[in-house]
Each structure stands twice: as structure tokens, then as C-alpha cells.
Amino acid sequence: MGQPDASQRSEPELALAQRDPEEESVHRALEGYYRTGKPPWDTGVTPPELVELVEGRGALPPGRALELGCGTGTNATYLARHGWEVAAVDLIDSAVDQAREKAAAAGVAVRLLHGDATRLDELDVPGPFDLFFDLNCYCGIPLHRRDAYAAGLTHRAAPGARLLMFGYGPEPLGNPMPEVTSWAAGVTADELRARFPGWALIDVTPGTNSVPTFWFTLRRDA
Image (cartoon, rainbow, N blue to C red; front, side, top):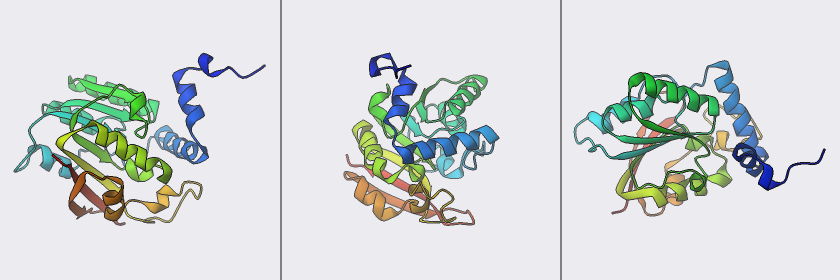
């Protein structure tokens, strides 16, 4: 049988066809983590860095938030419970399904979308957003897709918007998947300054993990 043409393919099939081998390797690895039920970034506990931004001294007033790589929805649900209008995106459909269940159980409205954080134009998330939250999503993105990620956020950022991002430093654990170079590259402050023109990197705080990790806070120019 012949292959269906593009007009006959479903949206998930079209998205799959757009991925290159490295993106496919990332997708397979992430699916494997969720299949075993042990994604190390999805602890079920909202990190204190986000709690401080939402509830601490000088907390941001509730507005519109977009979470990139939301996993099973712990942090999207937390934001919604604290008055934020939340949209959240994840590449893995089973994670999104769990996030929908978690938000429903908490009795909050979260707009959950199955999709690629580097292809936001294909999703219905026009913005503008006042807060972006990324717990380990960016540092897992192949290097050649990171500019698209940054452009997607910049296009949707309200003046003065914040981006709170957690990521690993370069080669914290070696490279468990040689075909995914981004997982060894990690993320650095210099990279974020270069990839996010029009944003100021206002804080870099080391994480408490046993390997080098960092919390980065960026602010969109007014």
C-alpha cells in the first residue's frame, strides 16, 4: 500500500513527520520515562522557587501563565489554584492525560495541550502571557530547535513578563544518549543571553541537586 499524502494524515502523524532523528530520539526517551512511571523531573511537588515567585515577598500578581513541558500537571494545577489563568503544553500525550486528571481532581481550570514547546504557532496559545515556567524542558530540547523555542515565547510575552527556568548545566551526568547532543549540552546563562534578545537575565541561582543545576529568571523588556 502507498503512503497517505499530507492531506490524509492526522495532526499527530504530521507532527511526527516534521521531527528529525534527534527530535525523534528525545520523544522516544521521554515516552520511555513516562511508560516506566519514573520521570525524574516530575516529582509531584511544586518547587519552592516557583512558590516564592507566586506567594513570597514581591510575588507576581496573578495573570496569564504558560508552562512548557508540564508533565503530569503538578505546577500548572498549583498556578491555577493561586488565581492564574494557565495554559500548559507537553510533548507526551500520556503526561497530558494525567495532567487533565490532576487539574479536574483539584477543581481548577487548566488549558492543557499536547504539542511541541518549540512549535507554539501550531497550538492555540496566542498569549500574551505574564509568566512562563519551564522545569527541565528547555535543556532537553535539541540545540537546533532552541531558537524556535525562544522566539515562540518572545512573541507571546507581555511587557515585563517573567520566565522561570530550571535546567542542568553542561554534561552533568555525561551523555546517556549520544544521539541527543542537547542532553550533554545542558543550559548556561551565556546561552540564554544569546538566544533571548529583548530579555534580561535577572537571576541565576544554583540548584540543590547533587549535579550542577540552575534556576534562571529572565524578564522581558517593557
